[in-house]
Amino acid sequence: MNKVRKAIIPAAGLGTRFLPATKAMPKEMLPIIDKPTIQYIVEEAVESGIEDIIIVTGKGKRAIEDHFDHAFELETTLAEKGKLKLLEEVRRSSKVEIHYIRQKEPKGLGHAVWCARRFIGDEPFAVLLGDDIVRSEVPCLRQLIHQYELTASPIIGVQPVSDLETQRYGIVDPAGKEGRMYKVANFVEKPALGTAPSNLAIMGRYVLTPEIFKFLELQEEGVGGEIQLTDAIARLNEVKQAYAYHFSGMRYDVGEKLGFILTTLDFALQSDELRKPLLEAMERIMQSEYMTRVIG
Image 1: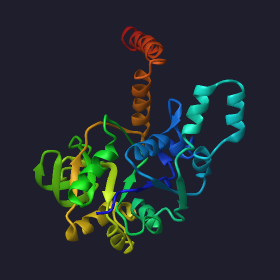
Image 2: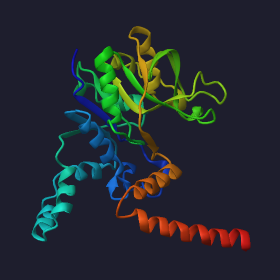
Image 3: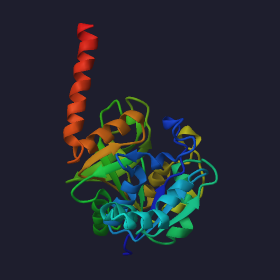
């Protein structure tokens, strides 16, 4: 069984939920406190043992490449001024080897993964989506890779959501359960409200086998007129049993505005530097809101 050494990070989306901020800046570069969201994803991959990463970009995404490149003038200036801690933070983002390829047409997640097929070759690989940040004692992807090492089968990261949220996600139809592992009967992409076979939602982490590219090669459109990765996984599941793994950890949705704001607040509350002043500011805001709404 081949080791999972490579990962694909799709980053070609238009970021329409964050316009006009994303008109000229990739949504993946929007910061949670002082770190771009995509850096959290890259760091998880590296901490999980991934050796080679390919980021699938689109037009106007050059800032991502610049971020993970060396910034010699900035690094020299920081070194000369003795700002060594900040220098180490800046250098941290350029230590990993990252490759890039463009998705020339916005055809969906499945197409973005297909674009990286030659980079992957005939190896198992990981896919990490940038809209999902996971904080956990053991990196989320590392948990999935461990399950792959036990089964040699595709492993899909899932967590339960409310019944009202199932229409937003790819949903697993489980055929059996052992601990946190589910044998999958089928996958359903964004089922209509009230029709989901379970509340186990796919949360942006996958370990897949190269057979998936045979089904992505068909370029069949699914929900939203896009080539859906979930549809290809469902077909792969017909010939190679796939499993869903309920990973441990706190998952943050940074792909929509409220989730992004709540993630920023939660990360700030976990910061020794920001926690106290933030709580004080939030208390003042709540008191002001109360005075305005209740007292008038």
